[in-house]
Image (cartoon, rainbow, N blue to C red; front, side, top):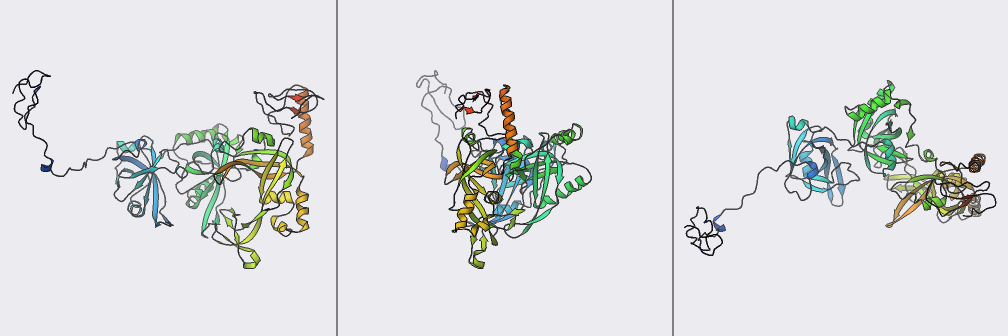
Length: 545
């Protein structure tokens, strides 16, 4: 029937509504369109259309159906695990797509057994039906916030090389200058590229479980004019470690690119390989070519080098006071600060001065973990939980003492060899003096001694409470001739109106080159000379702290 006027109520009808005819254009309410009859329909069919390929960077937990096309850049070893929930196998591998997105995939138990033989480094795959979980950034350096956990129903389909797959890189680096690693927190991952300066011979050490493994130390340098030690572990010792050693013996200094090296902090910053580290020798990438040219043709081989792994002795350029440690909030920026303070020992705690330590070698150095002495051999034997075997007890200093300079007092902690220097004997010898008059004599002799302390200032968390802890890294007796000459030079600079040098090595007051006013004033004696916002009074005038 013809439709009535648009907007009217029943104008002309809304006559018949045949099952497959077009509806009336403006009719009334009078149609006879049948209601849906769900009972007559079959089960709702599942959408089996293939999921569209999405960039890795677009993956998120709210994306239900996805497929990524990516190339395998690294494949971890098949590992066996065991805990209170059971046991099984696990492996992981890393992939990168055409847009540079990276993500790690993990497979456990049955999924591990299914996919481990299928995954090959360098091959491209279509991957889907995995579960996304937050990435564990302490182990995962990739640029995705997620990881994919594969299940037995996940799919991993290899792709033939074509124009699309050729655009996918074989590996994705995010290089950091070696000098910037000084700011990296211990345990984080970093990509670096550097020229190999040296390569030590391989050595065999014992793991915690008693098995043997190999390590090799390599020194690398980049155009930030900084060098760092890279420790190769396990299979990396021979491949590529043996090649690096042979190249150096022939007078060549190869360029290495390292992805996912772990940052350490043993006597300064270090790097170490882990199971997911990738290490390439003389790779065909722009960064390696630029570094090769810098080292060979632009003076890189002869440039002055800052060593990040020479320990506290490499950080002796800054002398501070205890007041500065507090005023400048040293050690609170997420990394340790290494400074020197000239101070005297005021008081040594005598309640606990040492602890029983493990004397076994682990990872190339003495374990030194606390052990539990047994009744064997009069308590001279102990069980080390870390090494999982018995060891000879070696008492190790753990001294806590109060030191003071002209500005403040500060509690310090020292261990091991530093305690030997301060106390004049080792902890095993001191143990024989406990509860005897000789003990007070040894402690008294060590007190009121003046030392040049090299300190590590860093935050420490215990029982959910974070505080700044100051640990002595090494001590030395002050050279008073050198100290006197430096002070005389500083005073002469003041008399001439030149101010103090910013790297002055004296303890006569704080010496920041700060432009804002300071609340402290320091008396130096001699002629007046303002410096950096701090007033240094002359002669008999002022200068009180």
